[in-house]
Image 1: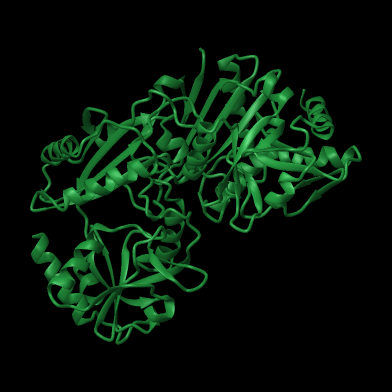
Image 2: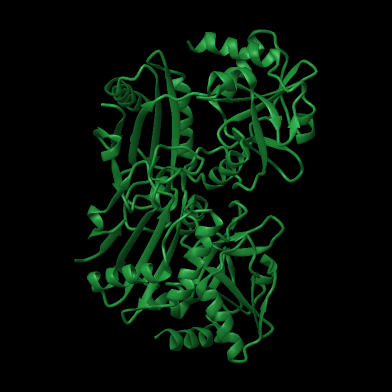
Length: 280
Length: 280
């Protein structure tokens, strides 16, 4: 089976996997999700992903009877059935399918969808040369800390970035505060210190973000969580992104501005090496 | 057939109507919608709804080959098949089903879903006595003028309002500016003038809102589109909501505050009567 889906207890090829047209995920964006990957067939940071998943469910008041152990078992089963060397796992939970109304339904079971596809990663060239990103006004809602499927603002920003030949869109507030990218967290290196925006309702608590912060601290790399402005970022010695498939990816250009020498920097490379040692 | 769905060319009972788990409407909120109703079996304001639908498609850059005439034909067919005295028509278009990625897909056809259900309306008691509404911080994204399915903020606010026994949630900015409700536009009557917030990226251009503005002007009722604060609203002589199923619905309580005498006012009743004469 090339790629696989699980929907409310049933496995099938992705092509055959469906949900009701009245699923609240489809009609109302009333759901949350996680994206995990495997390294050599083993799920990476599954406990952290499960913790964040349950935080998201709580944040939107989605009542359920899921347990971390039960979800992990289904995910592992799906990964085995798909049989890829390395897998990308997508998991989504919605507030179920029922006659459309914004108010929460009563006694409607949630929808659980899991898909497993072959993992696709940034190319070696992107890792070696770094990527370009493009800024976007951060017009998203005020609870970007919740990993919901209401991703249209991210879709539109990502599309504009891609149309300009950029790998990612970087959300920046009107006052110049840098938040995060459409699918990744952002870090800079300035005067030998690694800096990333602190957790707030404007950014998602990235699993890789946390891992990189911990790795930096363990390995004596000066690390701060504090506000970054676009000016700070443009003047930085290094800029990099973190994410589940992105890992630690150097950024060498922001809009039409080159970052430092326009080449990936040593701190980014060191953190990526440390990350791969941890993950592999 | 009690209630009916149409999905990409195929009619079925709603219970059997499905979309792919990889539909971008389900995974990314990457779609837009319209809600229409019939009066005595005839679609109301279908041209206005179609115009707004195409504006929404344009606003999210969704490429398609739909025409207003073709969509109207399908909707009318669905309404006839369902055969209710009066119908609620839900129409949703998404950027299609394909391997998940935020960037727009190439050569993937959009998904078109239409459902027809029996129309359910506010009760006579609600019309006669008026309803209570509850304020909510407007934490939505900055493009509320686009009718997208990314409705989680509306879902959460509606649920909090319903839990407090209220009919609707009213989105208010931090500075006290009143925008709109989770599913309706809002109007006040103050010193004999009907006032509603002007169109902006913070509110949806309601079809009933436009009809009521036009009706007021035609019938010599003083009417202004200008900023309303929560203080203006609490001090108003009358408050009412407009929407496709709401029509013109009196509000008599906001949070724990009674509006004027706590009874529906004469201007609201007059505008509702004028609206029904137009619609019926």
